[in-house]
Amino acid sequence: MTIAEINRALESKQRMKRIEDQERATFDYILANLIGRSISRIYSSNATYPDISEVYPSLFDSEEIQEQKQKQKDELSILRFKQFAQAHNSKRSEEVGE
Image (cartoon, rainbow, N blue to C red; front, side, top):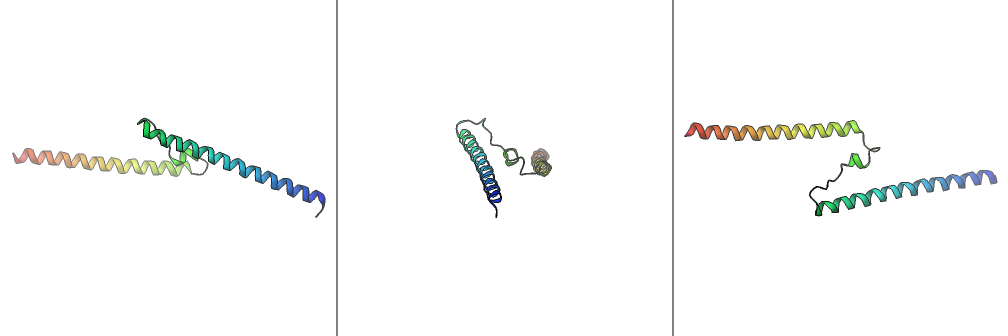
């Protein structure tokens, strides 16, 4: 290897190390923020904890997350409707039984 090639390799290694350090610092900062938000839920009922897709939007496909959220909403709606129907049927059977 020539001296120029060695210099380029060292500079490349330094750039990669700096990028890795920046990523680590970013993740540490995000983690500290999440810990703070988690602790704030203890003291305030209004505090919310974000979904992972909100914290790391570049790591998760937003369409996939939206589909999962919609599926959860649909399941919750079905469950609520079943509970309503059972309560209504129970009330109706009590009225008929009287």
